[in-house]
Length: 81
Image 1 (tube, rainbow, N blue to C red):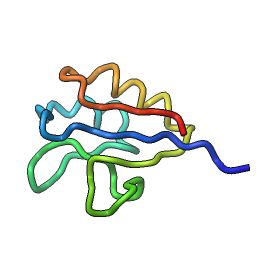
Image 2 (image 1 turned 30 degrees about the horizontal axis):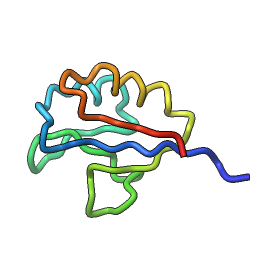
Image 3 (image 1 turned 135 degrees about the horizontal axis):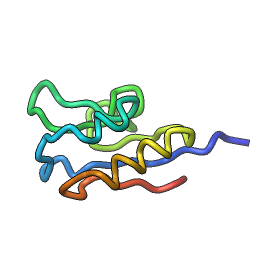
């Protein structure tokens, strides 16, 4: 049996960098040093060149969900795989 994963993606173009996602779920989200916008932490990225999409373990669903709900511009999305 494979471990359940959650696909998480961010519309980084629309990010206003308020950091609420990082505050609520620092295991998954971080702020880019290059452009100051939210991104998926490197260890979870599907593609190392794409900071906007990742696959995270199911046990992080609660914090991902909290970040999705709290994002003031609703740019964070997830689905269970």
